[in-house]
Amino acid sequence: MRKNIIKEAKNIGKKTLLFYLFILFPLTAFATVPKDAADEAYKRGNYQQAIADYDSLIKRQPTAELYYNLGNAHFRTDNITQAILAYERALLLKPGDNDIRFNLEFARSKTIDKITPESEMFFFSWYRSLVSALSTDGWALLAVASIVFVLLLLLLYLFATRVWLRQVGFYGAILFLALFLASNLFAYQQKRQLLTQAGAIVTESSVSVKKTPDKTSTEAFLLHEGTRVTITDRSIANWIAVRLDDGREGWMPKNSVEEI
Image (cartoon, rainbow, N blue to C red; front, side, top):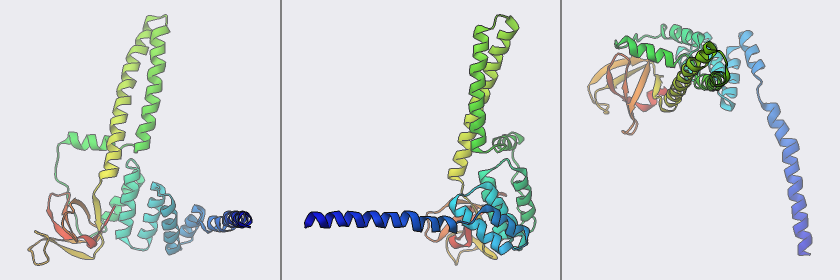
C-alpha cells in the first residue's frame, strides 16, 4: 500500500510539473512585450504605452538602445528628468555613442541648473574621451582582434623569406601588442567605471543642499530636478554627500535623487 501511495505521489508530481511546463510557461512567454510593439507605440505617438513597454523590456534585459528609446519617449512627454536618467544609463552602457550623448546634452539644456565643469589639463580630458570611445565589449573585441594579428605577424616574421616582410611582421606585431595591452586597460577601466559609478539625478523639483547632514544646517546651495550629482558618502542614514562637476559639495536627503 505504501509503495502505491509513493508511486501515485510521483505521478501527481510529474503531472503537476508538466502542467507548469506546458500551460503556465507558454502563458508567461506570450505575456512578454516584443520590442517591435514598443517601437510601434512610440511611432504612433502613444508615448505612455511606449514607456511602459520599454520599462518592461529593460527589466528583462537592459540595453543601451532600450534606455535610449525610453529617454526619447520620456522627452516627448516633457519628463526631462526621467529622460536624462534614461540617457545617462544608456551612455553608461555605450559611452562612445554620439546620438546618446547629443540627446543627453540637449535634455540637460532644458534644466534650470547650468553646471560648468572644473577646468582640467587637456591630457586628462583627451584620455577620458579615448577610454569612452568604445564600450567594455568593444574594447574586449578589439583586444581579441589585436592578439590574433600579433600571432599572424609573428608567423610572418618567423617564416617570411624576404627581409622587408620580416620587418613588417616584427614591427607590426609590436604595434598590435601595444594595442592589445591598451584595449585591455581601457576595457578594465570601463568595467570599473560601470561597477563603481556613483552618479545620480535630482528628482525633486528643488532641493536644498546642506553643509552638514542636518535639516537645520545652513544651506550650501539649491539644486533643481534633472541635475546630475556624484555621490561621495552614504554613511549617514537618509543622507548622502554629493559633489557637482563644478566642485561644489554638500549633503542632501537620499530620497531626493535616483541613482544612475
